[in-house]
Amino acid sequence: MDTNTAGLAGVVAGQSAIATVGHAGSGLNYRGYSIDDLAEQASFDEVAYLLHYGHLPTQTELDAYTKRLVSLRTLPPVLKTVLKLIPKDTHPMDVLRTGCSMLGTLEPEHDFSQQYDIADRLLALFPGMMCYWYAWHYQGKELNELTDEPTVGGHFLTLLHGRKPTEIERNMMNVSLILYAEHEFNASTFAARVTAATLADFYSAITSAIGTLRGPLHGGANEAAMELLEQFESPDEAESKLMTMLANKAKIMGFGHRVYKDCDPRSDIIKHWSKELSQVKNDKRLYEVSERVEAVMRREKKLFPNLDFYSASAYHYCDIPTPLFTPIFVMSRITGWSAHVFEQRADNRLIRPSSEYTGPAPRAFLPIDRRG
Image (cartoon, rainbow, N blue to C red; front, top):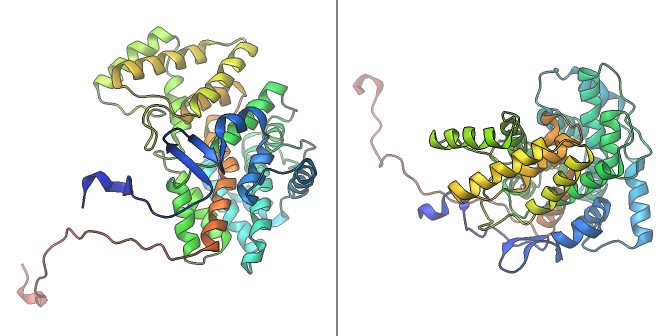
């Protein structure tokens, strides 16, 4: 086996019309639209519609879609009971994985004609699912999972904080959800497609994706970045301690990318929002620490920040608890996962790669009394 293809690096594993990632001259596009244009001009609901249906919605289509998502936010009573029973010390990603699987037993997919409805239901439900569990265990209350916030990001922040978000908080969440929505054949998306290729139900595919995103080498980097940044009281302290960490060969999360070689096109977009929030909140320390860490990593390791790095400070400025960072990823990426499940099912073939065997040569079986 060519070591350059370990982990399937550089291997084309299928065709997709959903996104381009790291292509020369195109950066990151969703169905042909650049991430820069979408982040600057679109709402997350528009992007969800684009990913699911292949085109940007008209105003009439968008209004109907937003209204539909709002109407799908009610948690089933049995699911609420299950969420209460999940222990307080459970990782929030495990809460979403369990909640998704449980919903699949309450509202099962009987045939593939239901797939768009299920995708919309999960998109509408994940913020309430996460915040209901969190409120029960960490805020000591039973949450009303319904709000009059039309946007997914605004709905999540309202549920989490019990107040309407400010305009800049709402706008940052909208952009963040757009940036995280889709990223071609990343690990969790590929896991969803592998599961879908077996003709498993929709919930199984999404549960596979959530489990894959749970790993710190995929979705957990934003949490790890926040844990790193919280160690430093100033930019100078950050540089000093980071140099020691690098000398000790510590892994610094939030830098570099498997596909991008020079920069992550999403990073500067979320960095802008982190800076704006630091100014509005009159708390520049975390942002300035983040900038110094970025500078040191560029100078010492020639590594660039990926989306996760400045997402950490942007979320922190919105008073989002660090353990909920990766669940926000799920609230967004459900759109990309769903689009890939639709695409896999439309032209399905079982995904079954081969491996290069590295075990013992053929050998004779010996009776137990002749071994040793």
